[in-house]
Every structure is written in C-alpha cells, then in structure tokens.
Image 1: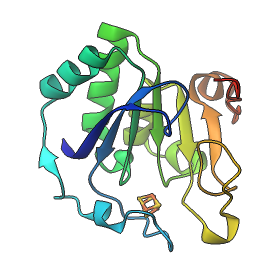
Image 2: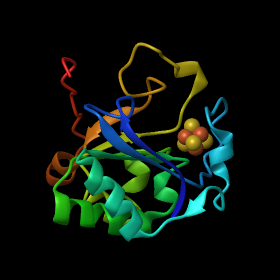
Image 3: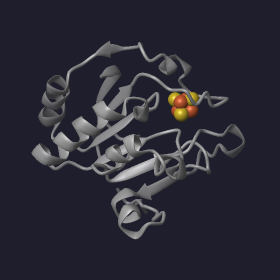
Length: 164
Ligand code: SF4
C-alpha cells in the first residue's frame, strides 16, 4: 500500500496513544484541505502488509488509518485491518471523506467496515470548521460506531470518553 507516513504514539487521531497510518491518495478535493499533498495516489512509499504489521505490533497500540483517504486503497486497508484484528485484536479507527451513506452502497468499502471500530466520516467543510469538537475538523463529520451501525442498520454515534 502507498504510505505517506507512519506516526507512532500520536494522540490526535482517536483516544489513547495510537499508531496512525497516513495513506496516499484522495479524490474529494475539500476546499481548505489541511494536506493537499496527500491527494497524489503515488505519493509516499510502497510498504508491505508485513512491514506495517511489524511496526503496529511493536507499538502495542490501537491503530488509526488516515490520509489522504484510506478508502482510496480499500482492498489493502481491508486486508491489513482484518489481520490487525485477527492477530492483535487492536481497536481501529478510519478517517474518510466519504459519508456512511456513500460507503454502505459500495461493497468494496463495506469490506473495510467489517474490521473497524470507529469511522470518522464526511468531507472537511470549511464553513463547518470547529476547533472545539474532538477528533474532527468540521461539524458535519460524525464519529460512527461501525459495528453497531452495521448490526442495527442505522447510524449509531460513537461517544468518546472525554476523560481519556
Ligand atoms: S478527505 Fe481529507 S485529505 Fe481528502 S481532500 Fe478532504 S480533507 Fe483533504
């Protein structure tokens, strides 16, 4: 998979110290995007699933996929996320510019959802920008409890423990 960078021990992409994988490629072109260099699908470097698993296991920490948009490489993310769950059992978050309603219509993207805990969905919208909301850039973005949403067939919010 094309990886822009791996950040070990970050606290900005979800609760607790996490290993964040920033993946290359994004087509959403949100005005005001914090990182337009991430849009290039050939940006960063190619890293294998085994290489990434070694880093993730070494850190013994939950994992966040961000970018770019990690759902630009859905097969690779689904495979790695499944392996993280199977071999390590770690909590997994995914940040995407797609909304849940767009994702649930696309089987390739739903394959990723099978393996993740929390989705931060939707594009960054400058007019909705809010520095006071936790783990998101703009108010339209939701924290979604993915497994509860799949089980109940309707969006279930994830409520973070703000004491973390
Ligand atoms: S989804 Fe994220 S990376 Fe992609 S354009 Fe929007 S803000 Fe930028």
